Length: 80
View: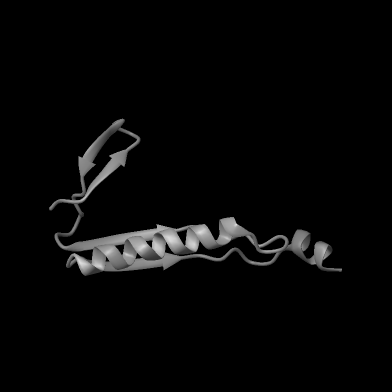
C-alpha cells in the first residue's frame, strides 16, 4: 500500500516519493511557549509523533526534527 498525501501546491492527492528511497525527513515547528500550555501544543506533538511511528512501522527510516522556540522578552515579561 502506498502512502498518499494531499499536496497543496498541486491541489491533488499524490504518492509519497521520498528524495532518498526508503528515507523520510520531517521538520516540525514546535511550540512557541508564551503562556500556559494548551491543547494545541499537545495536538502538534501527538500528530507528528504518530506520523513518525506509522512511517517507521511501514519500513521507512525517519529523521524527525522538532524545534522549541527560545524564551524571549515577551515571555519573560509575562512571567513576572
